[in-house]
Length: 60
Image (cartoon, rainbow, N blue to C red; front, side):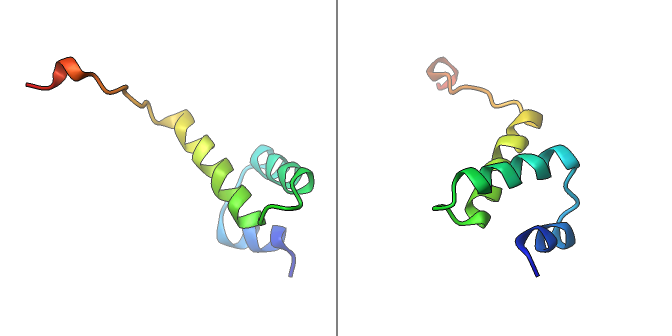
């Protein structure tokens, strides 16, 4: 079973994400595919989460 088959069984990725993942794996053969997948997932997650910068003026 290939890595891509494992992904499709574990997650419901869209085609764009899968294409980016396959390209990143191909471009970075020295990195583990699972590590690359985790990085891309965290980048995708930040598209949906607004991160507020720390403000020291908010502290009492």
